[in-house]
Length: 113
Image 1 (tube, rainbow, N blue to C red):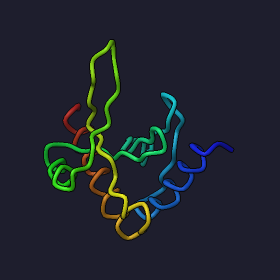
Image 2 (cartoon, helix red, strand yellow):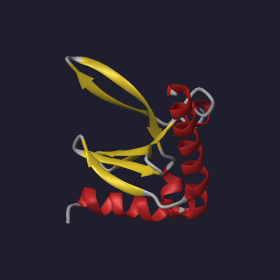
Image 3 (cartoon, rainbow, N blue to C red):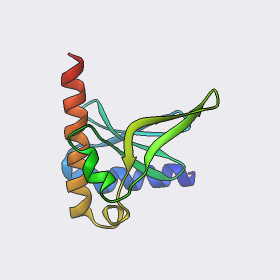
């Protein structure tokens, strides 16, 4: 088992309090899902959580970094921000942050319909 898979297994385990969370391998990392909605992603052994206009300030107030990637020499940012380090070590805190991310994923899904 790779270190990436071990970390994604840990993230799935620590987020189970919000529901039957599962990980799916994608783009060299993992997507973190609940009820078919992706609310987190793991890249380079870092967990990023889904944000939107409503929840983003809570992440930026803590100086958490947005997930970004390089596309044709241009830096692209996605609507996922690094999870607080403390949340990775505390299931109760992770419950709060994972619920914020899942709520953002629900709102994003509703906006598409």
